Length: 500
Ligand code: PHE
Image (cartoon, rainbow, N blue to C red; front, top):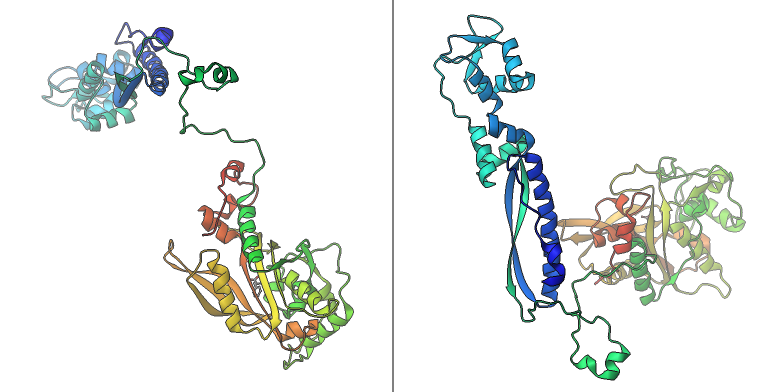
């Protein structure tokens, strides 16, 4: 076809088939040419001028060393050939080195020994001799390489060995079978890509040749910002909560007092979670301000002597410990502050359903599934006469909205809930029950000092945002999801998430 003739011309064949460098160059240019040809064929195919199919074929060429062996024989053959016939007489290493060169001698000697073509001369130390009577050998390596040079192909197993020894190179040949298409022609018609007002006015659009849409073409990525997968999953959770009538709690306090993070939740001041090993403590400022004094007094009492039917922990409550600032270890610190507000709001307590999704911090060993910071999804429901049955029923509805239906509950322990339940779901991919959340009925020791009226119970539950996100996006290592090592490209290309 006229315009492209220059482009589809193959490179000239090598003038000397023994010149490995020339042959190699030729094959490189030929590969480029094949790709160019493929491009032209595709565009002709799009215009329905031709149809074509292509097949691959592997072709082998000799490397420089391979070429030398094909011409002069393998190193072992050359060592053997340099030795006197019969095997009674040897030749000194020095002389062999002079005749063959140090490299050929070194490689060839070992191989000739291994093939039992040569040995150390028993009568003269420092000399080599043929094995007695071995005056006829087949130099298979050289024969194989000669076949490769002549035909470009060889038995697969032999080729693998020659490739490993860097004696042959592998090339890929493309073959095209081309036929005329319905619009075959010897000139290329320029196809119209845009419908213009001229075409419409003149009526030319009725017969004009339009370029077909290529629905397989990949669209360019728009240069915009992108939501991180965690934010997408968070949005899904938020929508589930809103759908269920929840309001969102303010979570904009990463730094929290031990009072709200632990003491108001009836976590004893000696609890392991409050160890520096599990919690990040803040040095500066040294202490929290603004802890409501009357409420602090009631919390102190419930820890020290109990009340509301409890004997308390029977230890001396420390004001210094409660004022210590921490990076919050769970969003239940927020729930606690909000429940306190709910109890003390103008007009008194009203039933409420509240949720939060935000970051928490734990001083833990970091591995493939744990970071020192992660996100918690948490919900609390406060109302008169709520029971454990409500908690279980509620969990079933909540998780069903994420497409998780098989739930099991296992008794657990939290200082602030009784009973406490770990929530498990059957993971079909892993073939086992996995923990997906923690929940419970908040204890009267926590609720009553807040001022929540008698008869009001609160259920609560929490889960991580990272785990469902990793499952949803098939991510195995948390560091691929959060932190400085994540690939921006994956974030940009992450599909929108949707729980079924
Ligand atoms: N705070 C708990 C955790 O960090 C979750 C939880 C919230 C449990 C509310 C019960 C009630 O695992």
